[in-house]
Image 1 (cartoon, one colour):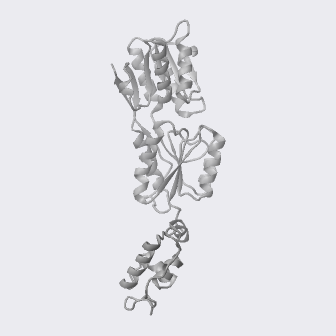
Image 2: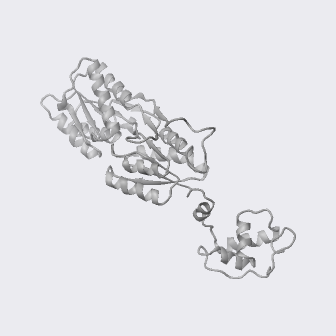
Length: 353
């Protein structure tokens, strides 16, 4: 019979022409090789029962036509996922997210999962639309850094069976695995370091109040002041900056006060960069500390205290948690009894001291 291990497929004459390279279908490959579409499909699935000569002809035809199988359709026919994972972030201009994405991809790519990155620009409506689109595209899972506390769209995705893991911020209103950084402890330690150096008027530059990391780091800043018996003077607090130029303007305002702060603590690298620009423009000797290390921080030419952590590991940990929930990669050896909450530790580094 045609296609058996002992007899070559009939029609083994000269290969026939097909569609232009890159546009070929399975039927084109079969026609060029002189076999049935079913036999061509078996070859491309590496079915060992196909005669070697037939296998060689089909593969040669596929190569000549530039045929690429529809992997998505194949996976869906087999009842498997699409092989796609959505990574939802708030600000692709922030280098933190590129490190996060690299960490996620390093874990998922070896399992054949492709990461699709979407940027929300700190806009909740954009995040809702992006999550809805990912669910409609039947992604195998979503790793998200949510904009704020309204996470009903993420809860809805999880309720529809899409695994959801949160990075950097915890779930609100639904159960999900998450990977966090010790935001409170890192900010408290950095502020305490400034206090230990004699500073009593310390300013704070932070993210919008709706951002979990910003509120936790503000809480750590205030805790360090309280532990030292210092008042938390709200004149020295500026929140809402998401870009360096906004942070530069806020820092300039603080430096222009009648009794300006002698030190600034910044809740993320975007605020630290903006504060540095303000210090340079005003030729101020104000001390600077911030959360998040960043490239060239050691080359700024001023004393700088930074809270650091492994942002790649944040992505890797999120990837591992998500992988345990995807259909193609069941948990090993058994699923955890409840959602996992991992917290990465921080440390202080000094530059230019």
